[in-house]
Length: 116
Image 1 (cartoon, rainbow, N blue to C red):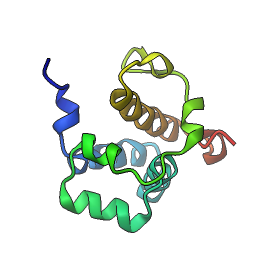
Image 2: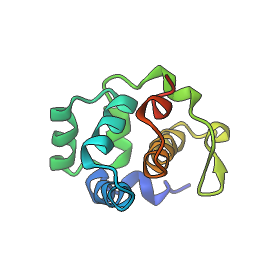
Image 3: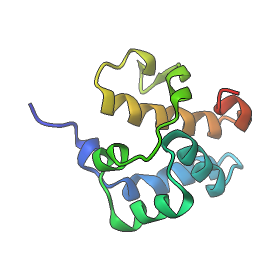
Image 4: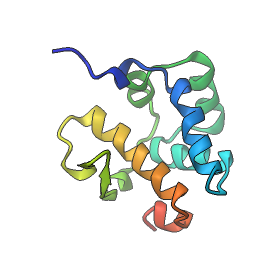
């Protein structure tokens, strides 16, 4: 079975789309970075290093220093699929990120996004 294409795409190629999506709604690149850091445990320097290295999604998720345990409380639908029901762990992690970016673009407060 072949891997889904997203696994081999560089995270850096998708990242600008995340930023553009939230900036259209009045949010910022700094907030995108904050959401990604919260989810993965990367420092800002670590995140920037991954972007510079053109790391693919599979490695970006695998190398995440401290995936946030609260990510398991992320619920909802992304691309027509409930993130909490995704069985493949890597795809679920990618969809968690997509869901948080969607919530940021929809204007949710950081406290709600971070499930505080």
